[in-house]
Structures are given as structure tokens and as C-alpha cells.
Amino acid sequence: MNQVPIVDLSNSAVKRRDPAVLADLDRACRDHGFFLLVGHGLEPTFERMWREAASFFAAPRAERLRILRTEKRPLGYYDRELTKQKRDLKEVFDFMRPAADHKGRNQWPEDRPEFADVMAEFYESMSDLAATTLALVQNALGTEDSLLVGDPNTSNVRLNNYPTADPLTQTERDSVNALGDMALHHHTDPGLITLLLQDQTGGLQALSAEHGWIDVPPEKGAVIVNLGDVMQAFSNDEYRAAVHRVVPMSSQSRMSTPYFFNPPADAIIAPHPMLATPSARYRAFSWREYISARIEDNFQDLGAEDTQIDHYRVTAAAP
Image (cartoon, rainbow, N blue to C red):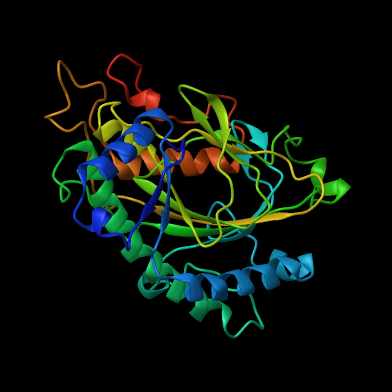
């Protein structure tokens, strides 16, 4: 049995929700919250995305700094993000659904005529795949697959580049938190599920309840799925929000692209009644409230632990 199971969406057993397939998925979701998707047919779309992402991060840093994100404009390029109050060794580019960006919140790099169109195509493809995958996870959990839904308009895509050396100048380093010991420090994602593409470099690790830190090895063309905090709360701890990290790059840079599938903006999150026995472990909370706190933690060291789903447990003090 694979520690990180591979689900082939083109396989008839998956299409008919074979109990053996769901059982493998269920075990992984209870232990570490990771699995892989193949048979999705999206390889050409992924290749175009990788080409544009690689070109963007290979360009002079001055080009990326022209679209540096801020607290007031939280989409675009960033190279000093915090996780667990430690600075990560990475560069990112964030964007929301291009088709829904009526207020022009996305910042696109100049002189790259195909970039925005390629990313828009990628976004829509991942939105469709995320909806299919979320239904599959709910089938494994044993709940109705239409109870928990995502919204492409509240979701987002991130392009990640993990260099081997700090991208900041010495002057910039003096004004921000020092680098930690990881390229990306251990954390969980806040939403429903995350669909992740990674290159062949490796370095992604998941925390298994049974085996400790395990590698999530590259599988060409595969989409990595990890569960988020909302799924853990909805399942009343039956399923595990995936704790994961990226180890430092020693000899070559690494690229990855996550699609964060999130609930509707006004969604209220609470454990499913069927699973809330003998009692609910989480109080009801709004998605808007939770994601606002998580985003704020990414920008600055507030002198306290980052907002976590455990803060919403019924036995915990409200954040």
C-alpha cells in the first residue's frame, strides 16, 4: 500500500467510486492528508503554465519588484513571506480568478503578452479539477458530495520559486525577519483542498501520524492533493489537514504551483452533524473571518502564534 496513494481519474474503478479506491483514499486522508491525481488529461495546459512561470522567475528581479504585493494590494509578487513567524526561502506570485477580476486586483508582469492568458486557462482547468476532487474526498468520508463546495472566485493560484540563496539584498534583509531553517516552514493550508504541481526537484514533505515526516516524491504529470483546515473542521477531525514543509534547496532551485480551492466568501464552517458525535470539536466560524486572519499573519510578525484551525476548537479560547 502506498503511503501517498495515486488516484487515476481515467480508471473505471475511480469513476464508479469503487470501495477499494475510496478505502485507500480514506486511509491517506486520516493519516497525512495527501494523495496524487493522474489521468486528468491536463498535461498541455500544465506545460504552458510551467513555461511562463519559469520565464517570469528567470527574468531580472527588478521586473518582478514592479508588481510587488502589499497589505493593501495583496496580489502579485512577494519574496519575504512568513510562516510560523519565520521567513521562507522562496519567491511567490499570487493571482485570483482572472475572469472574476473586475476591479483589476491582479497585477500582471509587463511585456509578457501570453502570461495572463496562459494563467487564466490554467486557473479554469484547475477549478474544474478541484470540484471533481472535492466530491471524491467527500465520497471517501461518507458524506454527501454536494454538501461542501468550493468557489473559484474566492480561490487563488500561487507560482512558487525556491532558490538556493536568499533573493533579498543585504539592506532588505536588515529590515525583515531572518531566514528560518526551511525553504517553506511546516504549516497547513487554510481552505478545502489544495491542488499542487511540482517540478522534478523534490523537497516536499508531509507529516504522517504513523511514520513522521515522509517525502511526497515528484511524479511527472501528477497533481498532488492535500487537505486544508476547512476539511479538517468539517470532518470533525476524522480527516487531517495536511501538515507539510519544503526542505531547503542545496544545488538547484525548485518550482511548484498550488491552486487553493476555498469556500464561498460567506460560508459558515462547522462539523458535519453526522460526524459531530458525541460532540462537535469546532465552533462554527466564517470563512471570511478565518482567511483574513491567515493572510495578515503572512505579512508581518504579530508577536504571537499564527492563526490556526485549533484556535476554533470548542475548548480553545477564541482568537
